[in-house]
Image (tube, rainbow, N blue to C red; front, side, top):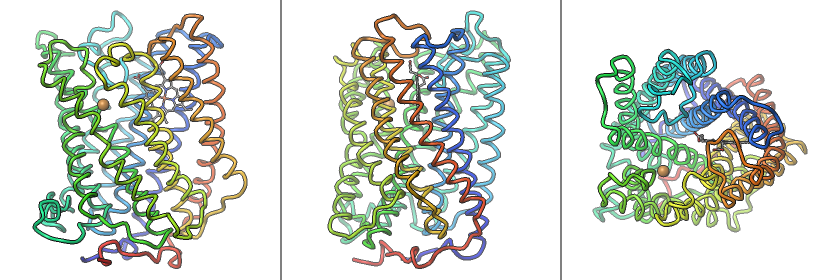
Length: 498
Ligand code: HEM
Ligand SMILES: [Cu+2]
């Protein structure tokens, strides 16, 4: 298998853009965490926040977290995929510009024009705010989201194009010849398999998202042109569910590549691995109806599919990845540092986060738990301890391969603070759910407040830990000279070892 090495040619300038993605991504995540703690302080009645402003913060936190982690995770995907596939750097830059311009519009829409319809902008909420915000706020927010979406769409079209060129088709990228038994051995490198899956699901997600945003915008300006609300909700959650999920599927590429490098063992894409990724490609796209379990107007078969397959959604990939991670590390003599610890931790964050998610995806339980803080409880677990752990791990890894890692005690302490206190934060959310605190409420009853306050304390420590990671990464980007430490980079090509 040919191996396009990104270290040659204009690799250094590409690395600079990758660094920029991670820098912006992690700084935004840090800022959004501050907003997260503000929400908990407000719900816990420790500060006085106008409810309208609370919902603005909720909107910016949800939008910002999903957007920023997707930006940083797409940098992981691009970085590793470009070792195997020729990609056009211009698209990476274009996406970044779309992102920044979109974010500015979104922020102006929220903070200057009071848009507070949450990151899911569910139709017809943007147009009918009950006086909460006007047309301008909603339009700025939606146009901003559309621009961000277009940027990402370009990026995934480019990764899909590169994969098709190198591996013949997207089926080639997913290792179909092995899956269907036409060939024996191993499929393309794990990074390519994951990137193919993500390209497919996110192109689907972004097209669905863009169409509902355009329809919402038309409705905003010409209210007589209406959308079928159930169709709008389907498109919105197809977009939201898939796009948010894809962050983990991009991040996990760092697990495959980095563990392979640290253990000097290849991560082989064997048949079970390929089958798992093929199944998750389909499931991720079709299970979004688990967000519509309460919509009785939805055809029953869709609801049943949403429930039944939700159990299976991430599970195949999670199992082959967790198992593979244990196997590759076992007796490898791996040296644990911050980067590899984060990467290994992220597996467990993902595993434990999926458990309460599966519970919630059960229709009977969902009728009780849905719209309680149980839901943010489970997704904060796999986003915070899974996805963002992958991002921070990759950031430390980059410093390491460039021979610029300066991690000391502060970093190790911060690592453990992050793990323990983020767990605590998620626990406080799950407990809030248990005492029936609804999600997305600015005002909490006295019975719920204790958990909000505990959460605020946990969140504050999480912020301090992340501050360390971000400061460390800023230090690295400042000293970045594009020189790779080849001793470390000397890696096993996953495709060359049968
Ligand atoms: C210090 C860390 C964090 C704190 C304190 C925090 C806090 C919060 C709070 C209080 C809510 C609203 C819960 C409610 O419905 O009442 C929330 C919602 C949310 N958070 Fe976080 N969060 C943190 C980290 C993260 C991370 C790392 C992500 C993803 C990468 C994330 C993504 C979200 C999303 C998507 C929502 C849902 C917004 C909505 O309901 O529209 N958060 N968070
Ligand atoms: Cu979902």
